[in-house]
Each structure stands twice: as structure tokens, then as C-alpha cells.
Image (cartoon, rainbow, N blue to C red):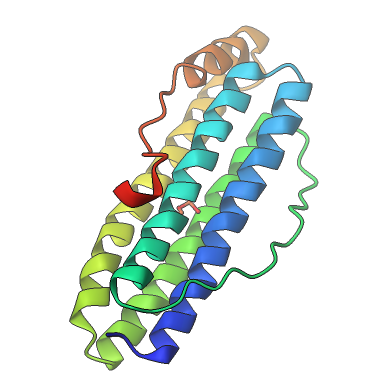
Length: 172
Ligand code: OFO
């Protein structure tokens, strides 16, 4: 059993993970509409990853006998119109999510909630991966500079990303 405070914080994080999914879906649409179909696909796979992150928290709440409470999602609002600016936003967003997960670890430690802290270790590792992915894409964009052919190749490369996130709630 977990505390009400911890359950509320996990429910807030579910909302943040689902907002991440919503944001990446919107970014995917914009990139696809601009002709970057490979980048659009990469972002849609990121959408599925985020939904998995949300479902993993939801399943944990249920395993702990706590309720899943879904709140409304904010509208994704982003002004970026270039690939570089968009991935700068992705990195900044992931850094914000990392800070949010770290805050949860602090709460779990304060409450001596070892089970939740153990679950959060998975998310800590995942955030290292999330920030690394965005950073590597930004490094590639910097190497490419204003070379249109390079950007074309990056679009093709990112379009090769596969979906590994389980879509089945019970496998979260
Ligand atoms: Fe759920 O890691 Fe990205 O936001």
C-alpha cells in the first residue's frame, strides 16, 4: 500500500507522461506536414513510448490497490518550425520530465517508500536514454549545418526507428 500523497503524485506523473505523448503526436503531425515523414515517424514512436510510461505508472497504482485518476491534458503549444528548434524543445521537455521524476524519488525517500523508489529507478534509467537520444539528434543536426542533403539523410535515418513499447496495458 502506498500513501495518498504518493498515489496523487504518481497520478500527476501519468498526466505528464500523457502530455508528453500528446506533445510528440502534435510535433509528429507538424513535421509530417512539412515533408519530414521520417522525423514524423520517429516522433510517433516516441508517442507510444510515452503512453507506455504512463501505463506503467497506472499498472503500478493498481498493483498497489490505489486508484488511477486521469486529469485533462493541456493543449500542446510549440512555436518551433525548424527541425533543430523542434529537437531543442524535445531535449528541454525531457529535462523537465527528468526533474519531475527526481522530485518523485525525493518524495519516495522521504516516505521510506522503497517499492515506489524501486519502480522509479526504471524511469531514472529511461530518462538518461531519453535525454541521450535528443542530444545525439541535436549533435547530428549541428554537424549537418545548413546542408539540405544531410537533413534529408537524417530524415531517412530517423524514419528507421522501430517501436519497442508494449501496447498492451497489462504488460506495462
Ligand atoms: Fe516519459 O519520458 Fe519522455 O517525456
